[in-house]
Image (cartoon, rainbow, N blue to C red):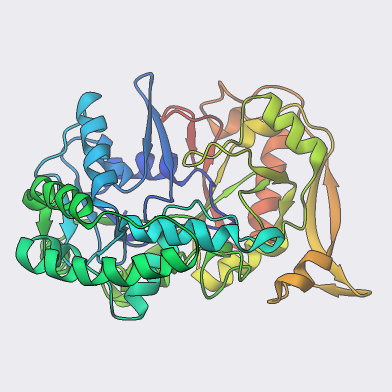
Length: 422
């Protein structure tokens, strides 16, 4: 498999957790390099459902090393809770998990600020998960953030935290919010730090040693291309680089050591929160929701749904350098006929072949559709590509053609066994 970056090629929630879990069978190390516990990767295995927010999905496989890189922002309380939940489900979390000492911390005042800022945006709100991710990355960019390395030094951490708490409590008070207790946060975080201490390491050194030893590394992206802070539908984006480049900066592994980029995309399109979704279709969304599909793993919110957007995924292929694609949730279209695919946009009478950079313009874009015949029968029990209905094979091949990358994986359900490898 060599060293692989896995990215979402849409607006997140593409099924990356399931695909990572499948690919991990051939990897030695799995790395999470950006985002925080605003991400939610769902994996179903052995009849159990696992929802992972900070820990790489590779934790569910024996003899795999999982790394939380320097580019991730970590809520230590949430991470300890996630470790405890996994252990309660029989999943080992010990020497197989490493946490970068350079990763920044998400603190309670980040969450409070996130909520207050979102409340004040009214109808132009971003749709944040209110987990404090944006304010934590803001502190990182302002060079005032606290890191895991600080948490490993209790006296230093308490001193830095006290200064930050005074500053942020003043801001919260001005916003009409309640101040946060320094004593409680300090005690809770120091307790969490003691729990996390055995996992903390210089992960850059570890990863380079793994490269030298010929280990195969899988980089697990969170969110999706169009939530990237630089390349997404700004301002309705997350606060990190969700595209392939973020795997390098968020892990310390240089670009020339990456061998391939795998883009994950649904057979249709979804989005959680605010912002443009050109192919959004209420009837398709209602159908998927009635099937019990498309509810956020982190927030539980119903996802907005639309037809497959080949304009967006082609652009995602350009940005990320996607070599191969994995198409998930094909079974979600088993009853749909015909199936629409957006192959262009119209804006003010002009046809566009790439999405406009301005969100207001993207909102005004009208999708140009082609229709393909549906297959009108279940694909959930299909285990070989050759056994897929011809219409389903034609559909995924057309997606690959429009996207501009080689199709290598098709998923027809949430479990490992419902994965077709080309």
